[in-house]
Image (tube, rainbow, N blue to C red; front, side):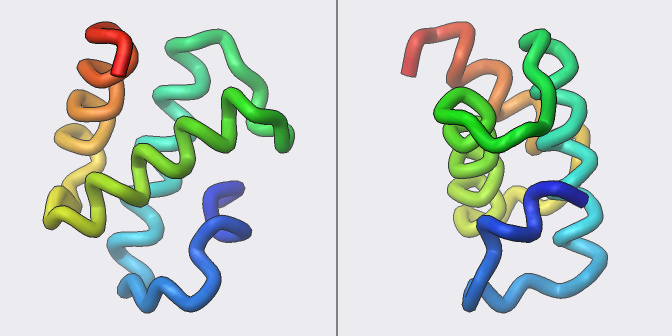
Length: 74
C-alpha cells in the first residue's frame, strides 16, 4: 500500500484505499516503475487519486483510466 503517503487528509474509506493501492501497483508494474518515491511514480499516484476523487473506485477501472491517460500523453 505505497499510495498511502499521498492520501493525507483525503478521507477515503479503507476499501477504496485498497483499490487505489492495487491500481497504483499495477500501473507502475505496467510502466516498468518501482514503487519508490520519484517523479514518475508520484505522477501515477496523483492520477489514481484524481480518478478516485472523480468517483472511479473500482481497481480495474482506475487502472484503465490511468493507463489511458498515459497512453494518450495526458
